[in-house]
View (cartoon, rainbow, N blue to C red):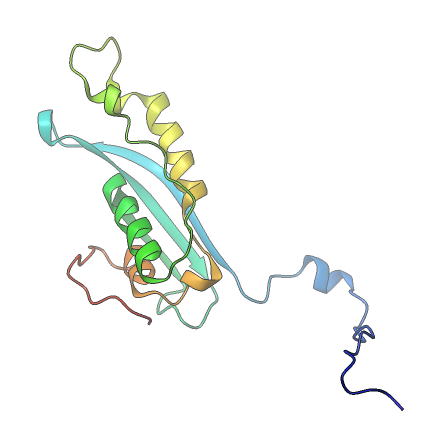
Length: 157
């Protein structure tokens, strides 16, 4: 007779994994990639935006494939919203590059191709597909809506 106060430590019976299980499509996935940086505008109104592509089979998302353009400030907004509302620790974003904004630089500053590529790579690795963030309204808006409504009401989808 077993003592009910002692935890059962027997292993669960599981079926052996075959090639279809190992190399087939994942049951649930959310892929977020940052591509194609573009410099827009002239003079003081010049900025860089990035193409954010999302693919998923999660039923909580209204679109299964979407592409939007986002600025660095949009990534900052998303990070702040996720950390405030869901208490998720989001990987840090690439720095603000304040020194690159100084006048009389020998290079293009914020618009130098090497800097833009480094920032794109950093944004790509910090884009969050965290399971706890997947039902946050701000993440859905960031990934699927053409423009971000910064006056939205935070919450779950």
